[in-house]
Length: 149
Image (cartoon, rainbow, N blue to C red; front, top):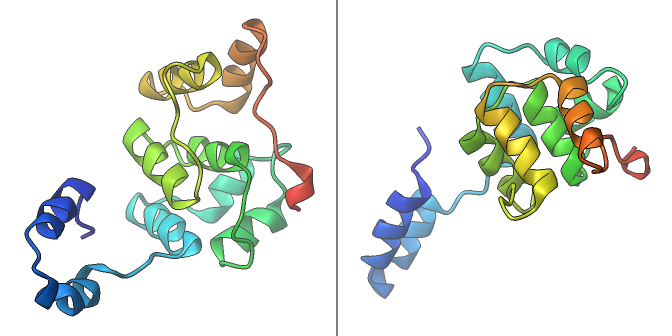
């Protein structure tokens, strides 16, 4: 099981310089994007085909499989959010996934992000429904960045 950032920070704060190598050996591994997302799907009994189906019309099937297989490693922020929604990820997991993919978390002072976060917290994962709410409030809808394909 992966340790929480808080736990790792506590360990890090109590690690002497002589223990640097041991810390890196034990905790310094980097999880690949494909490993992280595939691990999440596996642990939540979600099939890749379910993600493809829920993202249909937003992200191509081949692009999703390339991400899961580690062939694509730099998806846009909207692509990551779309994948999280397709996997029915809660706010905590969505935040962590965005971080792993190198994007900022959903920011409550950004009204577009707030709409997405409120939907997630209310277990609304339907992309069309979220896009309707974004559109109603004058924000860009969630869509794939086609330059990433």
